[in-house]
Length: 450
Image (tube, rainbow, N blue to C red; front, side, top):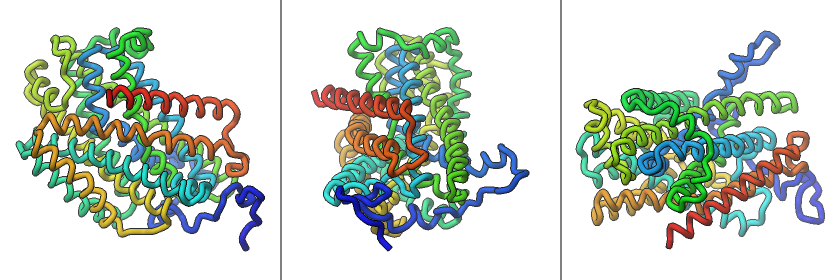
């Protein structure tokens, strides 16, 4: 029996309509969580570990590399504090996303559809699809650049080759969600190991790094530094990650009781926080390597990935330095394509309540991203792909607030969240972060078009 509607058109639990089916139905509640008195903390944490790392992929995708490289080469270690602050914002927002999914049984797309009117939901869906396509564009270009650097494959062909990951992803999805998580974690670790080795090669200034994590007034007073700082902030929190995380935390078969949900929130938050701290290390490592290599040698204008690759080995005096850099870029790009596919599926199913085969959904998104990438690459070459990479991040920045504001609004609503509603301190902090992100992205957008 349908619940009685209030005079505002909402159900008694705060939603306009009941969510028709579980998020990501082929994987929902398929991974068992051990229960019982003798089950230890670490075994429980292991059961919940995985979604955080799939989300962390979005914080180290090729779109972030350009801003980190530019920040390190131009301003030494100063912008490390910006990476740290943006990562703390990400930890808060991802914690809200997983809380929404676990408590309500809805991903963010379903929550928007079940709360807002149909026209509003449709607009939000269109904006989110544009953001996912922009993100996919960055991943296509990043992977193509890596293939070009490693194997000499022309950029145009590299862009086309990336379409083949549709088949790879379909194969992985058919073999279970845990395998997909394991492959993503392996590639994240690959990126981390590559940059850990790069840091050892670069021999950075430890005192300079420590000082860089302390916010400097110079970031605000120096317009050029402020521009790159806002670019780092704007490119850090990816809108599709909020939709993705609110869905994939539901792959765990936790108890649908207040106690079970509280436990799921606890362990999922630990998983997410640890994974995002790893993303903090990787983003910081990219900037540190750029500072220790390019800034120290007087190459202050290195901002493109190809330039960084060409200069790393000669400046460090180590033959394999550039190769490690390109391997990390390839792993980063391919990793992002896997999670981007899932996000696209979740968004389309959640907003429209329609389901396409995963291979078809991926192929559509991929072709939309590949066409402009091929055209720009053919017309403008490497410089064109670099500009297209930056443009994709601007598009992502434009869409971000349309995901953040509903997320904060839903998790702060007691009728929807019940006892799991955000306490006052978290509400204030979450709204402050949402306003800051929106303001900075608007500023970045204005400056970019100027």
